[in-house]
Amino acid sequence: MKRGCEVCGTIFQSMASAAKFCGLKCKFLSHFEQTGEGPCWEWGSPRNKAGYGVLGLPTKRNVLAHRYSFQHFRGPITDGLNVLHKCDNPPCVNPSHLFLGTHKDNSHDCVRKGRNSPPPVQRGIDNILVRCPELRPMGEDHHSARLTEEQVIEIFNSRGPLLDVCQKFNIGKSHASMIRRALIWKHILAPHLVGKNTR
Image 1 (cartoon, rainbow, N blue to C red):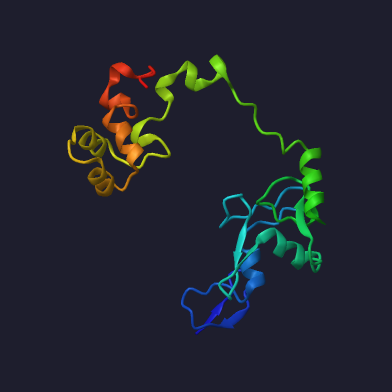
Image 2 (cartoon, rainbow, N blue to C red):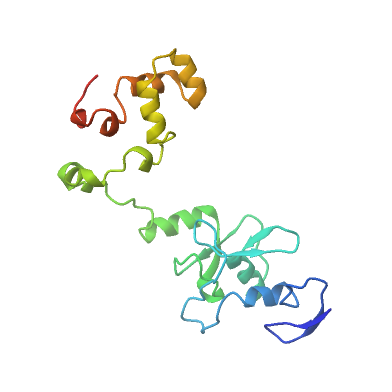
């Protein structure tokens, strides 16, 4: 089936009904707008967890969009070198914002620009969770929760062997024991003990 490339207009033959581009170059160029050398060229989609653009290759492998941009506009990448951003903007694929460097160069650049400093940990009364304990994630809302509130109540009220409870809910013996003694999930099992050490 013949169709026209959405980027360059070239007529190309393709068996895939979803084909929109005549090649990888046009597919790459379709994901951003070239706005001159100054501004960042923001990669549209998709992006990885770190915010870097990802370009899918026909071999079902992916390549980072800023690396492809450097190769397309500037030339090959020497083995062992990374493509770094002058602008510190991960989705940017503007070749004038990119430069080659080692992992050590990247680390030095990170330190020089202050990107390696973690945000200060707010302790004591400055911690929002201390001042507003109602914002603290509890129960099912906690990131490490493995049980629902109904399951916790069932374990708390159970009277059979602890090993049977562990097998039924796929939890450890100490986990089940602490629930039975209301040492955890206090806001459901023993609200009057919340904030108190009952060990």
